[in-house]
Length: 89
Image (cartoon, rainbow, N blue to C red; front, side, top):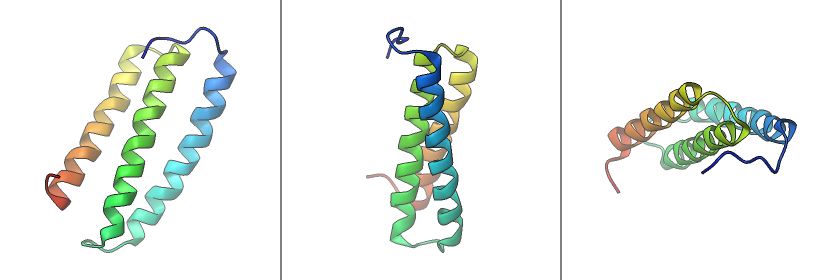
């Protein structure tokens, strides 16, 4: 993805804030599910996907690449957690 100059910073900021609220709600739901519950995999996948897209939105908005890299590292840690809990697909 390249930096998107056709949309202003407010557009991306609004999307990022909305997505972060959804992620926060999903993380709360995930914590309430017991280990081994099949729904945990769905929540982890959704959180992983949303965090990845948020990182891409931040990059497109023009954020510092070091901050975006930290977000992507967090996505990788979620993927690793998912793989350790449920095994490889």
